[in-house]
Length: 226
Image 1: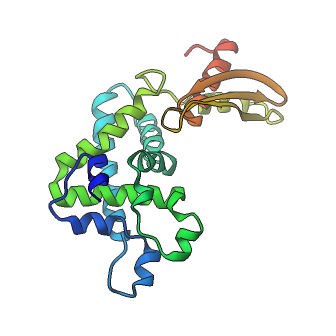
Image 2 (image 1 turned 135 degrees about the horizontal axis):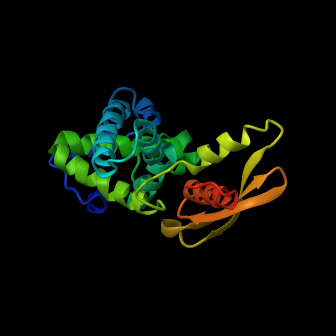
């Protein structure tokens, strides 16, 4: 636990909160009432995460309308992102799982790691208040935002889809064509296909960002002003 606290850059006054945050329901069920799962903490953490991220992007993206703020927040707090944050912290090495869940690879399961991130956030919030919770979240969110192409975030995929949908017989697909770099700094390359034709290619530090870059390239090639 001491190493995990170093990874979190936070030292708990109440170590029991951290242990509770790492206790999966499968482990709690095996212990038959002697311990509780992290599900209540996960519930609280989800709300704390939402307000921290909402507040940050509201203040730092003053020109974005409500719809784009909502999409941006969703991309930052989705299961895939939270799982990635947990992996960076090494949470899988410390999470308490039932024997069956651990044998089935639960320590690497995206849903379990994402839930654990929210539970740990709630534990930090309860132990130290909003400021350390905010500091914990923003170290990941700021890094994730830095991978976006520009500060005026646009949903190029949706814009491209709306154009293509004018012709119902046309079909868009995104194809992963390359993946390079270490786990903590991956670079993905994606092509966007219109039927069988490549109409754009893009790269990014996540598949999502690479798809957005490919959609932007396609829009530019179509002469769309961005």
